[in-house]
Length: 399
Image (cartoon, rainbow, N blue to C red; front, top):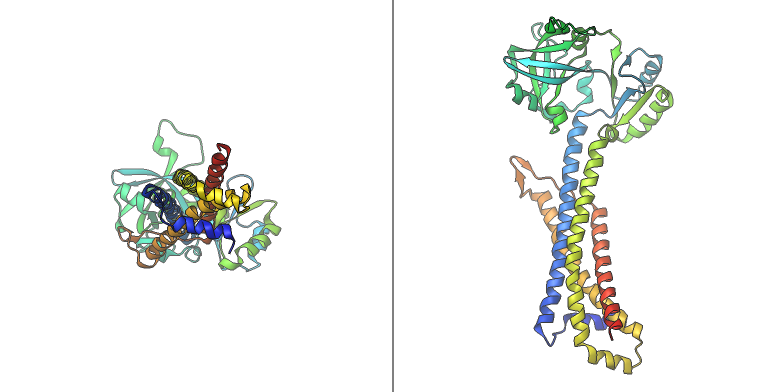
């Protein structure tokens, strides 16, 4: 063992002449430990939340989404699309129309995004995961009634449950000049029944979306049979990127192909910003905790002046003595880091396996990532080393 490391370990665990030094040293160590534990725990919470939302999106968003490069809509009979569909490298292909509309139920009204889908939509989404009540089976009419599914936020807003007796009304704007004398003439009115309520845990879906048959949407909005605003494609997870590449080879001139991450790029970007902003704030707190190392190491150096003189007489150089006390300070932060890492990882693993913290009926999600742990350990050790280096250089310059 390097003699400097050996002496530093002896200094760390030996009894000091003044109990105050022992107290400050252990306070410094515990401050670093608490900061490290908080960093690992908070980053794991953010990871868990991101994973939870990602799973919700995965249950509702398609593997790939085809959109036009120009304009809002396109023809589903486009030869390039038909060529792509004929590859049969996907598991489901669904034509989609999205339009703005107004939903009314009794005396309640709310603006909505109307999503019309074809019979393959059940193969695109994981309805068992997102359905709060009822079902997404609206392509087959019930006693010749038009059926739809609405988000849970919208259902609460207009006070509508699954109901095949009292209809809702869709007001769809007509594609013609506005009639100011008769505002109602600007809309077509289509009645439908709420056959299901879904919950994706995202306001943009739960509060605004109504899903119904694409044929009903074309009829309500007076659209042609080949009119679509997007194509949704289902693929096996391991083949998404390879299929996307093949689609791009055929469609890239006229269409954009988005995977699930790109469909929700804004959300993931904001989540990453929040995660690392929180990380920086907690790093600042850890940095304050490492300031205690400066105090405790300064007092140790003062107490060990006789030892320093002895080392000098035995032939130790100035750099050797500086390295000894830098190792001493780094050991304080390293021990604190180890304690904090063990506590932080233990807390996360206990929550993952036993779910001690819940939000209602839902276990609070956490996810431990090795990269985060490595980054936390590296940052804490670096802060400890820099604090020790600053202290030693400052003390030697004052001699």
